[in-house]
Length: 105
Image (tube, rainbow, N blue to C red; front, top):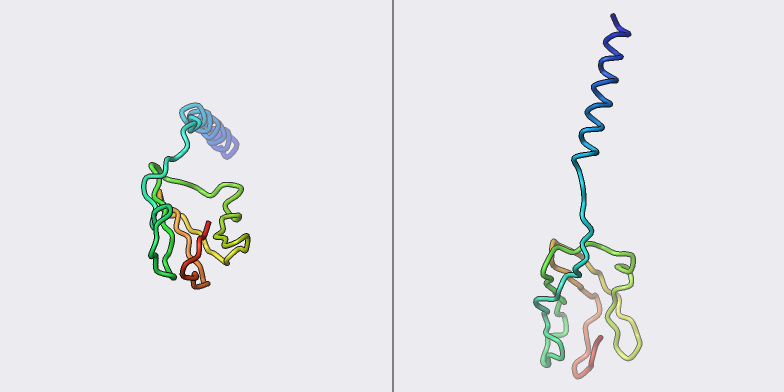
């Protein structure tokens, strides 16, 4: 009786697995997210020195292989930053107060 129950369970498990794997399909996303909004705006002047950078994209975004390389630089010197993702937003904060009359990339 136990062998028969185990056989039935194994058969049902196999059928269930086959059903699930054949019903699920994924399509590759070939369109890159488009930047919809940036705070501060590109080349914006008179920005407060402790501003957090926020980038809104056209679709949800995810960490890629270069996510850890996101940085803010001033004259080729990197500023310590922390980048986070929330759905379609990339937010970049920094612990260093930015300098007045300086350009950052």
